[in-house]
Length: 86
Image (cartoon, rainbow, N blue to C red; front, side):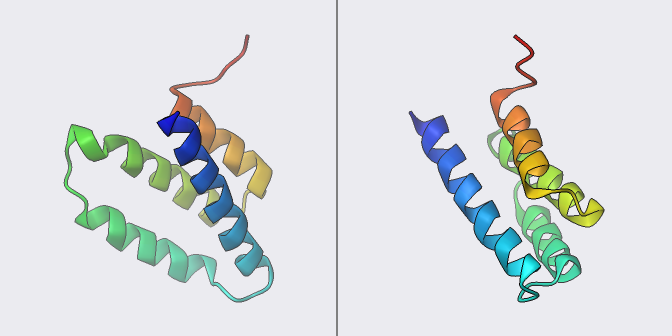
């Protein structure tokens, strides 16, 4: 239940941020700098590993200009622990 709740919040946040990028309200580079600072302040522990991985994947996709749907799929693969090829 908690994982689905978290995935819903991540998806909503991504949709909002990508919409703001598309409208020119947010700058990808400045957003990347913000996330880099945020991740840099997180403790490097097992408890924050998942969050750091998700944010790093998102940052990479933002830098590479990936489509929101592709990026969301990749992030959820990280959250779920790998691809579901079944």
